[in-house]
Length: 288
Image 1 (cartoon, rainbow, N blue to C red):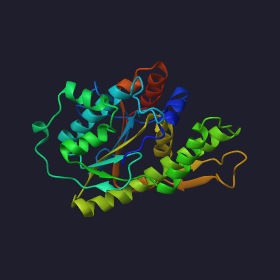
Image 2 (image 1 turned 90 degrees about the horizontal axis):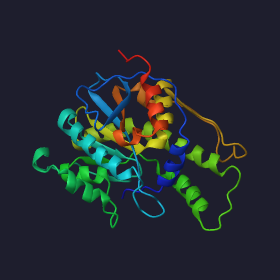
Image 3 (image 1 turned 90 degrees about the vertical axis):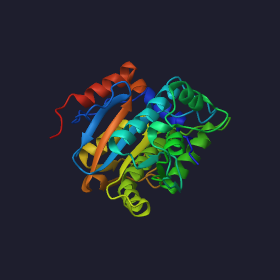
Image 4 (image 1 turned 30 degrees about the vertical axis):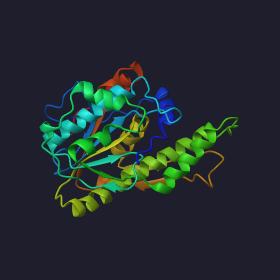
């Protein structure tokens, strides 16, 4: 089951998204600008490739789509289709997903492609839980795999829910504690990717997998920072160092033969703040 309980946190974080340091960027040949922008790329010549796609989630409180959620989900679906056609996408690694659903043999992608009206109708339906990743799995048979660390996920979920209860009195450090756990969640997700890809290689009999990791836009600055520095460094939450200690480790992805491309859907770059962030990402020279 896909869970988007962190949608509210992502919305709050996006509202105060800080400018990240400039990073190298190049392009995937013929990637359609109508779908999004590539904001970071590393080792694009490696046979095994990971595409990280920023995303927008439904509200955890009401299940409703936000002002940009539907458009971003449509673009994420189309990005997945493009990767399937051009890069032979093998695996989907969604934030908030637990378990795995193997790849299945379905008709060729062009035979089951959803037209724009049908796709929008499916993703706009809030009577049931559906998102771009589930539709990609159902229509194209792409395997779904878990990259979440359940223990850290549940800690973040419990803390967030405690803050959403009616009459809840938030401690002065609530926001910093939650941000700490979200950073630890992201760290665990990125660290788990090589192991998951290795497992999928054996299970799906894929020699060099291509995967798409979908994750909330609010994580974007931290993702870029970890990838650029090659390590993960998380400061302890003030006043709660026993429960939220400092964390520092080398980034596993940086030591593996895995190419990485980070994409932001077009609709999520429309605000001035996010456009400034994207511009700062792209201001450096491309990687060799």
